[in-house]
Image 1 (cartoon, helix red, strand yellow):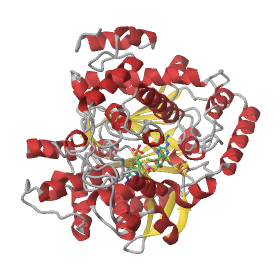
Image 2 (image 1 turned 120 degrees about the horizontal axis):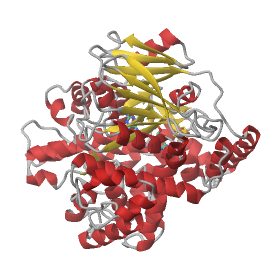
Image 3 (image 1 turned 135 degrees about the horizontal axis):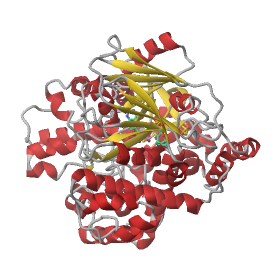
Image 4 (image 1 turned 180 degrees about the horizontal axis):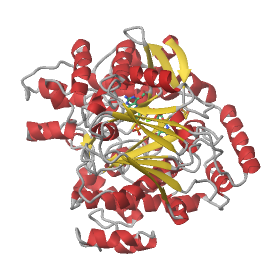
Length: 608
Ligand code: PTT
Ligand code: SF4
């Protein structure tokens, strides 16, 4: 089979046994890889209702058919599991040499189950798999542990690892690679920790199977060139995602004071323009010719790689107004293996709770020294840190009714860095994201501010579904970086062309949309199966945006309209073929070749 190896490596950490699973080619044609493969494997392998921290939960590390082939920004890998933060499907995507080496190891994915009694790491070299002692790595931060692993195995390997946050089961611990790449916001790193798995080191030397190499090379070369000739290329190289700080401020969507406002008087203190002046290096993922990791020296004169989400969530959202200090907190999060978005939300939520006197232990807005201490305490679940390690949804539940109004999450996943008081379609994007509130599936805010900004229109919902299909369906499953398309306007048509050349099967964008639609319905079915019930309330945006109007900026007084939001949600369900509760219709499941899902869901809910 071209484009895929057709094999998955299955590792049981309890029994220390390893086997290869051969998958039917139809699985690849219907789910592609990456996210698609991950949800299909989790549906099949995870026991229904499994505790995310139990040994029976599975962790999937998956490449897609284009991952780490020599094509634009292809060095990405998907990490997925049942989330300890949301108890639903959770995943993330990171750029890493682990993608490159897994691609050359002869496997499309690694599936890990069971749990070791003692800390271990996996060393995979083509088909050789070893369980290595990790006692001396346990407790180390991700930077130090990665350095040790490189000393042991050399630089020519891919490494995915967790820090103290993952080891101590912080619900928003992520997997880290290369001192500045992070993936798996909904606690994928904590699941790795629950298995006592500190790291996966992979080294592969096989030639990936490509159907039409010459054709692939030609298309990829043309795409690389288009990227470099794009009008936005130079600016992108200078600022990367950091340009979004000023853009968000101008459009009143910069998360400020726990998403209370969309503008911040001190935004210039964390802006992309400032970053440009103090930048010392640029880093990025494999196979990328538009590398966007901007490195500055932080408050301790150490390197910190900045991105928009990190800086907005650890800057304006908690009122910390110094880029070097924000860089310091960001670096600590990378070292500890904590998701910066959920961290910024958890800190912001607690600061507001403290201001409202709902908690005894005080935490002031922007209190740098306390924040620094807390990041370490969260990672070790010490003192107040143990409370914040639970994330916003659980903290708010324990503080009562008032706290729920300013708990900014969807389905338990904290919202990423776009305030939506005056952005109804972006609010819906958060509401319907398949992992909880993340912008990665549909960054519709850019379209929204360009068009009918405040409208609750069908056109926006159609655009949202299209974006989900492309970003959450295609890019997450191929698996490559979406930024060449989003930021420098690389034509989407390159992707089906590359996929056709890699696999030898003809693909169009429409074919890929069918796969995407299938993936969204299967993920939704998984949530219903795991929660044992479903209602449309699960798809509501945070209460704050409906209840607390903006008090600052150009849109002062604005908030979301609940009835109109609900109408957009109805349109969304109709477009996905789901009923008014947000449950896929039987006919939809049949049309998408998801017949195997029907008997499982019928035991839980009535299918329409
Ligand atoms: C992603 C989320 C994001 S999205 C950011 S910044 W962004 C935060 N980055 C974190 C970080 O850094 N350290 C940390 N400890 N926590 C972090 N949490 C946040 O995680 C990232 C880039 C970026 S930068 C974006 S938008 C794009 N995301 C892609 C995606 O999701 N899919 C895809 N096919 N391509 C993408 N390209 C871009 O990748 P999660 P990375 Mg990340 C340090 O994974 O869980 O989805 O959370 O992958 O290699 O770090 O690249 O303004
Ligand atoms: Fe990685 Fe940035 Fe390149 Fe995407 S654009 S592959 S995130 S360096």
